[in-house]
Image 1 (cartoon, rainbow, N blue to C red):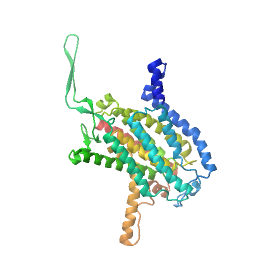
Image 2 (tube, helix red, strand yellow):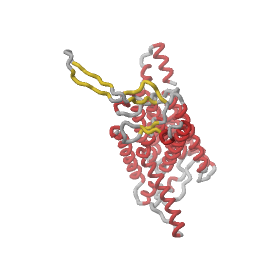
Image 3 (tube, one colour):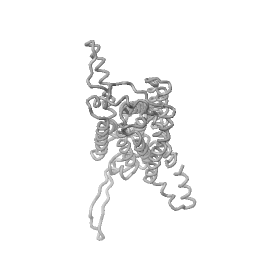
Image 4 (tube, rainbow, N blue to C red):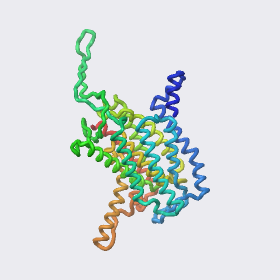
Length: 414
């Protein structure tokens, strides 16, 4: 909204300061500020509303210290996060950008699924919430939308590197050669549709999903849509499982979103993309504004969600956060970095699968189920070991920082 308005004012009336809205850095800073203000100032109003209407969390007794004291804490706080993300984007985002539109759709789509789950738990007093198969159907539906857009939208393109070396000779005033610089790769001037993605650690090579199916177009598209479904489903469920302690998911997610924002900026900047030898994706730098709004929303939400939490985000927030991370990574073609970047989500999900699988196996074989962990997901295992909630959250945050820093290091390692 403001982007188009101030662009018009700048072009027609040369309004002083209007040109600032053309800069991604300025709009990103504005997005963070607006998101923080929305969560902090509107958050209290929403919490009071939820308390008046007794919209509180139903707590199952798992034998964890301090667990039952959280009963009745307002939930559905994910609505605050969604509002704090979408309002800044609608105000300062470039709304004709295909990637921004895809992120808005993804946020609303999974937000609605999470809201329905929270509604059933809270108002229908059904602790199981929305049936798992319906959640999966919703996640698959979003994966199909993202995959189709990435495959068929003419605005989703990359600029390939061409392997023709270009030599530049620098001479002094007398015509003597000072230095000769050889640029091994240059960006093609022609945008191309492709299903290529970045491979971690490997230089001068991207992975094309079409290679797996012999380059057949329809099979390539189907494969890519399948990958999009897998990524969206896996990351959103991993984030959902991670949301179990006060402030945990928000703290873990902030470094991930920041890293994705950095990758989007580098991928959308032709000079940096060439210098770092990564894929150049035109218009993807606009996603930095979305990442900024998301970081502001999560940090602002911690104002009320940090220990002891005054509100929980519920599935409205956790499913949306995971879906946003997944779709963001797909947009900038960095989905193969997600197992490293979102290593904690992966660990939480694996802890549940291993725990359940081992319990069923031992029960079938020995007649009595055994457990590998004291409790799953992983953060509850550490609670059972006696670690205090805030220490677990802080340690998970530090691990998330390390994983994200290592993800950025892979750019130079390539």
